[in-house]
Length: 608
Image 1 (cartoon, rainbow, N blue to C red):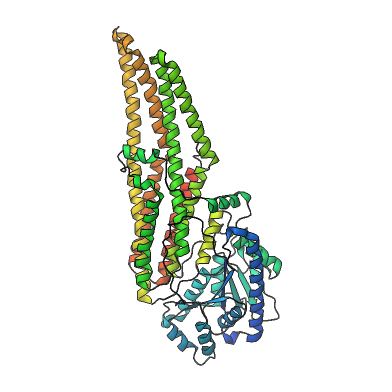
Image 2: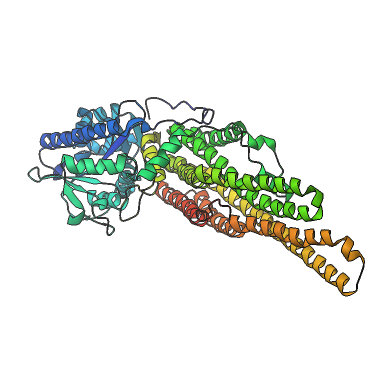
């Protein structure tokens, strides 16, 4: 277990930016003692490589400036501590000043019994005692190969780079070094290949070096020399924000965002209230109320999914980051949606004011002034939205929040990890959101726990109950609410045009039959026949801009997919299966967000 339990914080109380710790994590996989050369020579080779990586990383941290916390860089080393390469590399990492995390494929007592008689037990006990964090996985002694694959998967999930002390051959069966290397490459994790023959130089293997195709195995086109130049290139791509100046500007904007105590735009909440969708509640306009709801939800998750299952999960930093991103996303969503409603409705009001001048010529000057004020208000609102990037900030912060949320469950499951940033062929973050999520995941470190088969099943059930099911409920509720809103807006617009049609028919009939009242009511006829269509057009414009119907269908599909995953998790599958399912749930939610962003990014705030 970890040397200190994490103290729960009141995340969300201060929504200011909390700089990310600068953490670099290295993992190891490799052959057992009998397949290796001279241990001392290998240990020195690995130590030198780790020191080079640490020196290059410190230089990059100095270059990054205030993006990272001012604390010293932290270097973590993740090792399953098997005799041979795992223990040699772990000892080298301690020599190089790294902190050690032990990921054991079995409960420690059984693992120790496996090491008796092969010379690895004494070093195992020493390394375990010096470990800052110990994760014991539920490996089945009757199926050792699967257990070692599980340990390899957990190692890859918690490292930036994998050191492979390896003969370079393809996998010859389950649980071998070659399989773990393939897993790392498929996940977009760079591999430092240290050959078992000391005469051969180390090489870097990373699919980002060959971004044209997905590198499935050790292809020469994806290999580079292990030297300072290529290490710098690799670490810069992993550790620093994207080079694109726009993305760096967006990240700077996120860092400098100030918390809003009051959400002052009322148009969208009032629309929901007027259409009978959701009661207007002034408490929702206060940031403190929303922050308290977030704290309560995370406290419930911690209690039921971590504390009760005796998992020391480093969730504080994640909770703070999620609360900040979620609060900002909610603020800008409300601001942007309200801005659109403001423009459409005031556009209709401008038409009515223009007609009012015909109905009351003596008040024409007043109506003209009012129309001028309304027009200026529309233009000002639009310019504020464009310059303030309400739309882009809403989309960015919502994507960031929903990228962060499932990380808490993936962290508890120990084997799971978010999909790598970038693209499958080039796993390098191209957007600041992807970079921030990847660095925060790494900064969280590894959970500390002793997980047996029963506890693995309990974790899966808890994730279903407290992570996936609330998202199912949200999407179902959102789909129902948004469908009702869409139907009621459609009905309102249709009624306005129907009223216009009736007025036109009545006017034509009065003219046709020579009714004297037509002159008396002609002004009102003009007002209705011109004003109602303007208002109806505004209503339909609100519907079209928000794509309520499409949003409802997308939420329905997401709810169905997530519910199927939750049902499977409730059956208490193995830890590996639970991690697969939770990764798929995170992937499904992000896919929903990608579709949502693609739809909404076309709908920028504009006058017309």
